[in-house]
Length: 131
Image (spheres, one colour):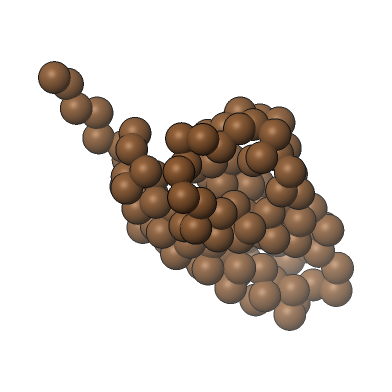
C-alpha cells in the first residue's frame, strides 16, 4: 500500500475516532468512572492518526516509532500504522460496550453498540489490485 492510500485510511479512521470519542463522552456522563485504558487508547490512536497524516514517508516508519505512542495495543502490529490505529479503536469500542453492559444493562449497551458501529461505516476495506 502506498502513502496516499495509507493516509486516506488514516483520514477515515479519524472519523471513526471522533465517533468513538463522542460515545466515550456520552457514556462518561452516565457512569462515574471509565477505564483509563479507554482514554489511553483514544490518545494513542489520535497521536498515530496525526503521525500518519504528517509523516513525510510512511514506508520508513519502524515498529519502534509506532510503538513509541502510548496505547493499549503496543507491540501488536509492527510498523503497520493503520492496523495499530484500528486495534486501538476496536479496544475502545469493546471497553465501552462492556462497561455499558455492566453498569447500565443490555438495552443501553445495545444502543451504544449501534453508535459505535457507525464508527466503522466510514472505513473502507482495502482493495487488492493485481498486475
